Length: 347
Length: 123
Length: 165
Image (tube, rainbow over all chains, first blue to last red; front, side, top):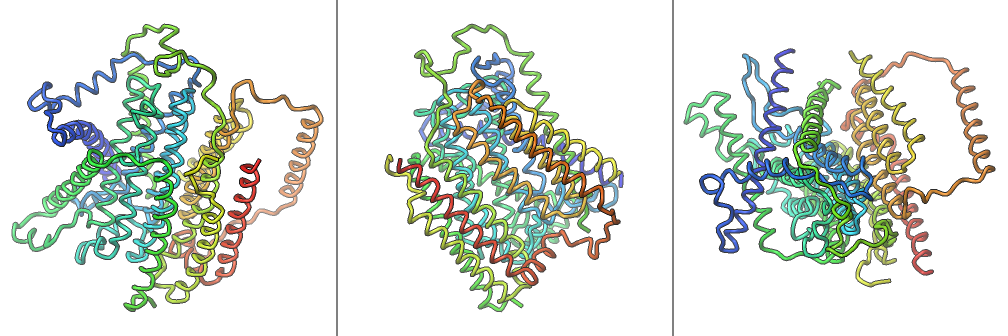
């Protein structure tokens, strides 16, 4: 039992460090990719190819003056970014990062914990993500911040419904809410994307909206709201908000990969592992590597879209969320139900 | 198999997350310089002097969106236990859910018909 | 071990519930209420009612409290804007609260405590809950959907009246 907790603590700390590093380098990647797309160089002074840029940014954030506007609610102003960061860090707990790992002679899952309500947990943490933004924006007592906070929260709650409905269709075909099992099921057969193409599309669009990323970034549009809910923030409190966003992007990509793209599984994995004669741990490591490859593709995809598409108008965004995605998601449930019934999958 | 023990790692994660956040907030408080002036602490308004309070009442539409969100959220939550048992419940379950979704859609179309989700015009 | 967790959660729930009442700032009250909900969700987990726990978080903390925050922000709330209540309102509040307290105390004073025996400790797990909900309680389930429908219509009616003015 002690080994079990030791393993879990190591895993939690590892996950935490990996999340932070991925988030840091996502900021770097974002700048490099935008540079690539706009035919610029991007950051290239700090270290070789500018690789130390995220570190420099981090140190700068810590050393900046901390400003709390005199009309703001001080406690809530500090609480806002704390909530945003905490909810962002809590979401990754249920992601299965790989298969079995042998640790001190016993096999464990490479997953912090597996709950049979896993999918709902993810849904819950997403819905709590609104708080950091709302509290932060309201406490600032700045017009732009309040506008940004209200826009962001209305957008996030609107797309949550379509997201929940998209996941229901997925659960209908998997029959479980445990993320570990969802990933394991895609081991032998095809990835869920084959059964749920429409569901995946809806989920992906909702992920963009939940992350407040372009083309759904009205809440923080620089040209209009000067950063939105974090206009008044400086130093590491701003850093926490930005970091939370990139961690959310990382976790969302991981969730998409787990739900629809087989997680740590890859085609012909058993054959390949056998041919290479890999031990359990090495095979898991290979799976994890593949998973991170998929995750990085989605992070890249998020950035690709951001630097390609223009921003939606707010009424367009609301219309898409309520009048297109929700009916589509319900249609997807009905189609899934009827198709599974016709294929004799029901009792 | 499923016992409250599975939730202990979540508490560990929470401890790590809170630890990091608190440390960061404290560290940044002590590391940065402190040269505060009255103007610096004013809320930002594009360089002009800020006027009035930011907390003004805003469109009732946001409020309505939040109410509808609560209602739809409850409906969505109701579908989860069904989706997990979808294969076991069989055709009866499917029809039960179709009825439920039918009522949901009835409300949804009413909401759209009444223009509650209309954001285009200004009134 | 479970006992200590129980005591801690109960303490947290009661403390934050009291803070809901005693906070001057309504936004703080909302946040304390969210904390209370988390403590109660913790109790559900201890009872192995996992679905209930997570639904409690999603619906109450994730949806209803967000609505509360919206209302508070919609009310144009400032520190000094809270109106001073009239004395008879205060008196009515104390009286009704006292009556509720009296009823509760009288009820629980007479109540017999019985050790809880669960037929099936796994009943709170989603899959089992779903089986019961969609077999034995199918009718209440459908009726709840009618209830939600009427709530939806009510919300539209109320807000439409406002926009016409």
